[in-house]
Image (cartoon, rainbow, N blue to C red; front, side, top):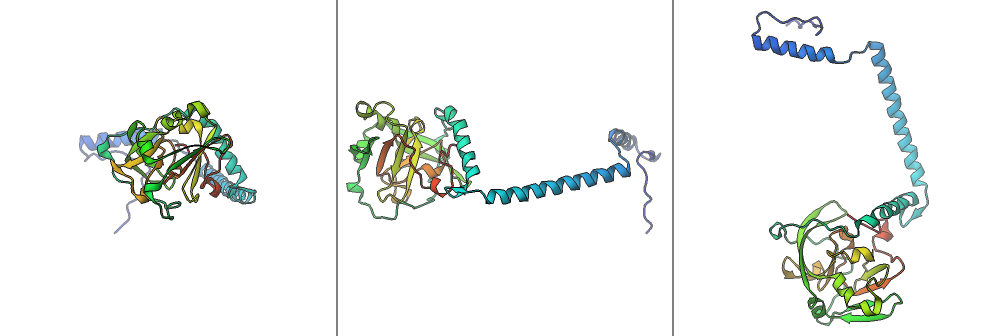
Length: 281
């Protein structure tokens, strides 16, 4: 079988045997081709060499940049320049995000969330004797609460999207009390803005989180004791956990034992392991 000879599009002509539709389509395609920029072989080769050199320079820059980054001193398990990046993002978004509320959904779209993380839950717990301790900026205990005390606060149900730093998300319905309503119990002792930060810990102190007070006073920040309309089970953080719709799930402390108001930025379990302390969505 002989090969079909090459035909330069600029010299090609319509075949008289074509239908009117085929001839019209040929004319249209030829007009489009005529508008395309055409370069000489020499110019094409020059552009190819330029693209190759640009790509090689980019690869070399990436390699040496990575080596430089690896040589930087670490701060909380990541290079210091990356930590400065986290802090810059916090400084940029913190003033504008404190009052922002997360999107809410119809409850029919929610379901039981998978268990992801059991740090702080390994130690046995007697739910009947559980109490929540609240400490002031000086470290003194200013109050303790049973679960019935928390349930006596106005109940809120919130259907929101729980987001994990691992990349997955899940629409879930929480039931509980606003953290701001707990704070209101201590207005006389500590004031309406009791501190700059809040630290929360599990009973065994194996898991702990720190948050700024503005985020904690957000109306969607809940002390949750229900999940999908049912009491929390042990693996989901019974008897009380934090629901943080505007923060990643690493801040959703399960099995809260202590709420500490403090004016010093508290440490945080995942912050100590290289993650962003602010963790805002």
